[in-house]
Image (cartoon, rainbow, N blue to C red; front, side, top):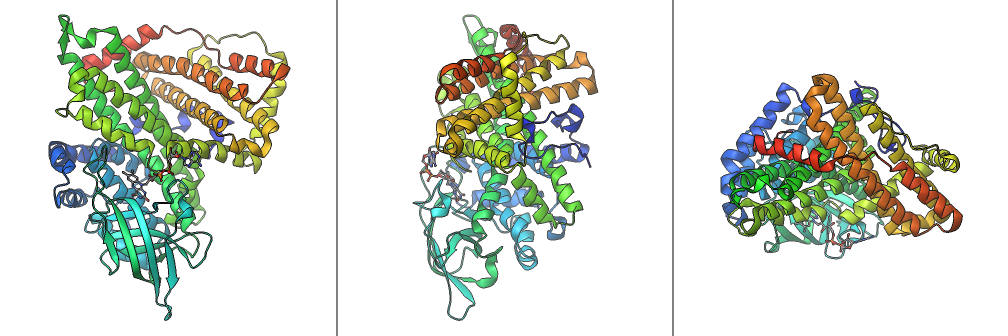
Length: 592
Ligand SMILES: Cc1cc2nc3c(=O)[nH]c(=O)nc-3n(C[C@H](O)[C@H](O)[C@H](O)COP(=O)(O)OP(=O)(O)OC[C@H]3O[C@@H](n4cnc5c(N)ncnc54)[C@H](O)[C@@H]3O)c2cc1C
């Protein structure tokens, strides 16, 4: 096992080395075969059926999920003793990425294999796992996750759904309603969250959807992902056997949150698949479409869009797989300490809650950029339903809303960092103090001449900028900081830019070490443009935060330091972007 992985949030205070991170170029033969199986399945079963899927054709989604089950695609994360394949988080992420470009199918798939099945895989007792997991792994049963209620969305623990123990002590009687449930139209197994008696926090129950008292609303009419079933579910005196309590009484909220951390992380992979698919569509069209006597791919304005789609996707991918491997390594550590598989998995997921939220927000916003610019590249054709570009544009929007809205996740990122700082799990406040002590005597700006030393110098400076803002914000605002949401969001934006920039730098350096420096020129272009842009974004968010709570001499001094720590050498971004676009145009597909 690699002993050098960083624990959740530690990237802010520690350097990483290229050898300590995983990059997607390192997928092994087995992982590549799984990816190919997923791609074949998409090509043969999904992509030519998109209209039928979006029309919610009766029985079609179940049939497709069942076919995916026959190929083993539903059991990738389920342990082998329950008839799954017990693959790593990294491999499951790769499968999610591949299936990710399956539009509504990918929503049904990921809800089933992720938030649907994982509560039982992670928290179920032996009997529950034996009963449910094999059937979920094959697709004989489909799962759904029922947390949201009409009055409890972001504030998930505010739900009114109630459970009371029956007089004979054999059942819990559940009453209430759940809303927006993915796979609601056909799921056989529901993980339902409800409060027992007057408990302050929820408990979780595994419920077979065909038991008396459960009824379903009509399909919600949605902006996008129209082929994914989304329903309200009503529970009227539903008798759930006591043995179907999942975990302990009152443990439901923790289960719900940890499953959401996992779901957020997986969403990072799903969006990657759509991004790559969409970029390929964009460049195919840009190469074909002629205006003013030439293909539109020859125009600088279009090259800008194509290259920026690539840059953001590449950075997103670098951060996603870096984190997956950390989680796998962390899990191996817990297994070595004697934890069982489910506990080890959940502990590792929980410890990367910060990274999960970052990947969810960053990935969903990269995807929105990619689909939006694809519509633009297609012009009027992007606005018709004739191409999947319009469908992708509509489908992508949900990713900023479910699995916790991006606002909630941005707040979570900074809140979790602050908590780790306060508990001294990460030495953030001391490091911030060190930076604040250094800013009285900042040396002349000097840019190292070696390429990677230069990039590392910037990344370290970005860390100093973020640490400084966190340190001074906490010193001045103390516990009120968590109520200053605009500042919290600025900090999380700085963190996301930093994490994406560092992950990309480490990947490019590792690629250079493996393949030779001359093989990574195009990746250096990606890194150059991204770090250059990240510096300005970090500066802007840092200044917006500072201007709202610091005044006088200290204000000037810290503003000056933010400028200092985000100063990077000029980059000819026009030429770098053109080179990236030219490679894409020549390959006529995303091939980075
Ligand atoms: C298509 C679809 C599928 C879904 N699938 C499932 C599923 O399978 N299972 C399930 O349980 N749920 C599911 N959901 C529910 C989804 O997780 C919620 O919609 C989401 O958590 C947001 O809750 P809400 O819609 O009630 O919005 P609200 O919580 O009402 O939020 C409205 C706005 O207020 C903001 N806001 C709320 N609280 C705060 C705060 N404290 N600070 C700052 N801003 C805040 C939000 O960011 C948002 O912009 C699904 C939703 C959709 C649309």
